Length: 322
Ligand code: CP
Picture 1: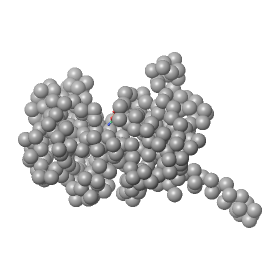
Picture 2 (picture 1 turned 135 degrees about the vertical axis):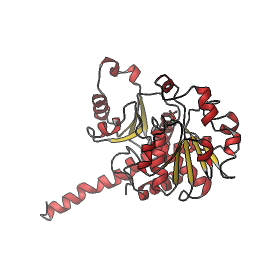
Picture 3 (picture 1 turned 180 degrees about the vertical axis):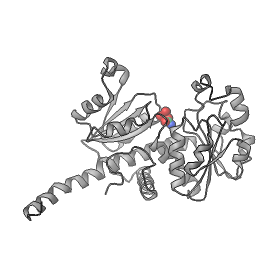
Picture 4 (picture 1 turned 180 degrees about the horizontal axis):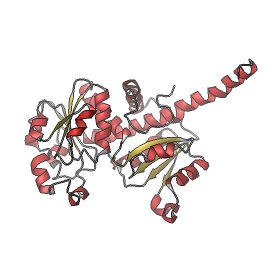
């Protein structure tokens, strides 16, 4: 049976049981135990209104590894340039036989909007400042593989939390699975009100790092500097960069993560980013397995359920009950 009910729009609505089931399915995918023909005949459309290296490529690889066909829709070279709306684009792709729309969009809630108008599955591949659920799942999978568990770990997320969909999905995912989440950064980028969501807020990185098992740096969105959210890149580096010296303040076995793309020399030094304690490339590799799991769950497992329904209805009709 399918874990997700039609769409994957965020980790906030998922239960710990659903998240764990998706992580287990991703382990199956990573071990090559999903049938490579399970999505034969299915069409996955990558619809990216923002640039992407990791998410778009890994969704494409994931879909192809399960036998699906992939359409890479490019808004820059489409009728979006003539004023076509997001909903019209989605309905058009669906009318051509698309089974899943993988959507990245600068507006928070874009995935929910599309999901209300189409019958095919919608996967949120990052919407504005809201969520990036498959990034959250691959982060969880990477940590579970590294430590053998998630519950009881202390995970520090440092950077522009306010504008980060990665931070939001990480906070929901790690908290739901029993980790302690500490959000760190300048007060303009990590407001105290976030504590209402059950996480700890800390404005001094040295303090936040005490007892940390995992240190996740976020990309510094340099465009925020002009809006006054951020000190200069140099000042940010001095106060919040993850350096080898700062990483030593965490637990002895602490590991480093970053969703990418990284600004080397700003939020992290190259020694940490590519050092022995970095999980960055493991995160990238796990992205393919997680996206295989999500597509498999939405399109292969759901199809099995959908095929049963008409038979059941016919049987009930014959029995005079509908
Ligand atoms: N982590 C992430 O979403 O990277 P891309 O923007 O390259 O997809």
